[in-house]
Figure 1 (cartoon, rainbow, N blue to C red):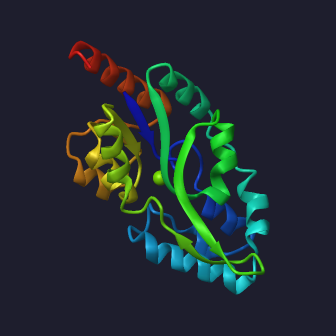
Figure 2 (tube, rainbow, N blue to C red):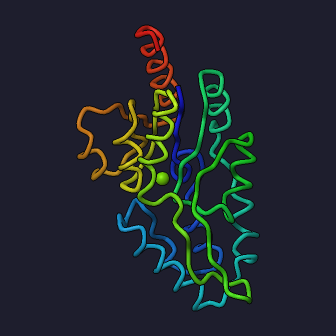
Length: 206
Ligand SMILES: [Mg+2]
């Protein structure tokens, strides 16, 4: 079994609002929980940091200090004992690679920034956007049963393509998309649901 988990809002806090609070940019308070259109959200974020003239390096000093939620490491460790674990997220490697290391060096599939010569963010390369289901179907064709967990509308394709979707403290719109899907309100719930999925798979000869 392969566990494909969202990062922000599930294993760690949302990074952009933390940057917004630190640099007093209220525009950065919005996340994928508020705005489903990720490109629109990113254009808004880039416009806000550009207006302030912030470099990626300055943003990284704050982003790299973000710690996983309490219990996130424990969950990842327990999942690793039951299968493979990857994080599939709309975050950016430049922000979240250290977070993936703090989570025990778990594999991270995320997006990349494009910088101008001064080191300011001028755009982004979406490696993950719209490709979450392609990453999942790749794992499936390699023979994995895929369990997935996410909290927002940007996890829709990840959850839809998984064999076993878990909604984590979901926004209402996501809940509406998956009536009857298992919902975890904390990481202990999540572990129990994944253990059940793993047991079920074993019982069915997976
Ligand atoms: Mg999320």
